[in-house]
Amino acid sequence: MPNKTDKSEASTKTKNFRRQRKSKEFSRKSQMEILGLAIVVVLILVATIFIVRFLVLKTPTDYRKGFISSELASNMLNTFLKTAARDCSQLTMTELLQDCAQGRGIICDNGKDSCKYAEETAKNIFENTLDKWNMKYEFSAYTNINSPLIKLGQQCRAEKRSKLFPIPISTATMYVKLDICG
Image (cartoon, rainbow, N blue to C red):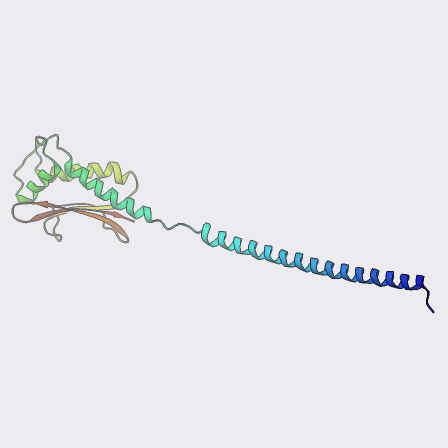
């Protein structure tokens, strides 16, 4: 017959065995949870790397360049047309171009007619701006696009930004156009 001490020892051993077993189960569960958290952290890091690589470091689309070229063409033409001619009674380039299209009646103080004076002024302005900035352009003034009165620069072969200003004359409409290439 087992005595009480044997029962208490057996009970203690059983309790210790149960504690160890529970401890091992808790230890395994803890390890699995930590492993699961580690996997989640690794997945988050990989996702973050992809986001940074493909979204943040993506080269931005250059919408500004086209806008700047278009605005530059507009501003250059606007300024040119409002420029006063020193040698032609302070007439504007618009007035000289109108005369150029209608018969070249104005002769400037330097002996040049309105077409020649407007062309030389445009050439001087564009050489000192667009040419120095290494920007290719085509400038033309015409009533008939196939036979321009003034043509400067080179024709754009690829993409271009244009500005077209109509100038009223007595018989039709004259157009002044500036294309900025690229």
